[in-house]
Amino acid sequence: MQNLRLHFTNRPSPDRPLTTGVHRIVREAAGTIGVGDALQGALLAQICVDRRGLWLQVANGMRGVHINGRPVKRMAVLRPGDAVYVEGVELLLQSGFQSATDVRDADAGQGDARVVLRGLGGKYHGRSVSLEHPCIVGRARDADIRVDDPTFAERHARLELRGDRVLLRDLGSADGSRVNGVAVRDALLVAGDQVVFDAQHRFVLEVPWAPSAQGNDAFAAEADDEPPADQARARPAIPSVRRWPWLLLAALLMAAALSALLLFGAG
Image (cartoon, rainbow, N blue to C red; front, top):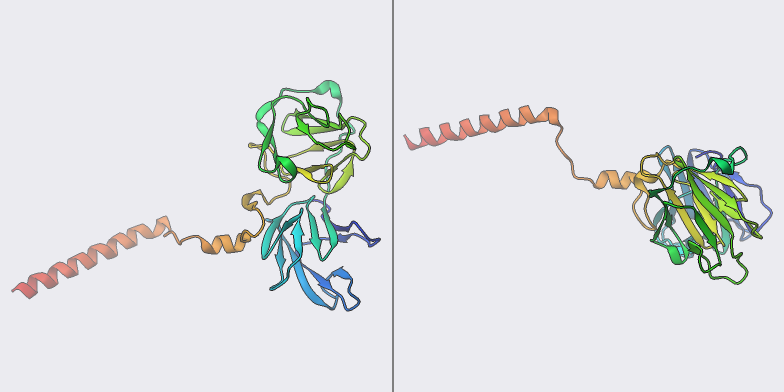
């Protein structure tokens, strides 16, 4: 995750870089929401970042925390592009993305049904849109991803596969799209990138043979799933292969001892 940062969308505050570690979200004495370890106030939530990815942990008893409009009671895995709502304040997770400046439309390649945009929000939540063919996003009846909003462009954007990446081209929309939380017109998407149309229609790009650029697909989960550390602790212990000979020997010795005890006991 490159250039990961937290952006306040409804107030003029500087973006906060999200480096490896724990970032506290607190309600300060003046009632404002702030992010930082040095801030004094009531702990509302915290964002944890490590090499595996990032997730949100809500303080005990805290209510009113949402990710992309969905309530979170305890924990949730985060992706760049997610909107975190804490007591009415929107914090947008942003990260870098690949520019499409040097990509020529004449270099279009073949589609692949295995490459999909998986819906994370809006009416396409839980559904997958294949990129076997170029995909049109818009209000038009024949759009592959149709957004029923009278203010949305009939032909908003076009997506098509370029190898293991997906080219997003704007088709003259009013507001463009968001990739990993950043407003764009054109972009080159890689596996794990999140793209948002019309604020609510969220998708993550899935390319089966390519590793995710965001680094947290190994434990990608919906709201209130356990973090990776808890998942690891919950797994049952499996004996190492190297221990099997010793376990077999111990079983044989126990069987021999039991047989001798029975034999001498019978005599």
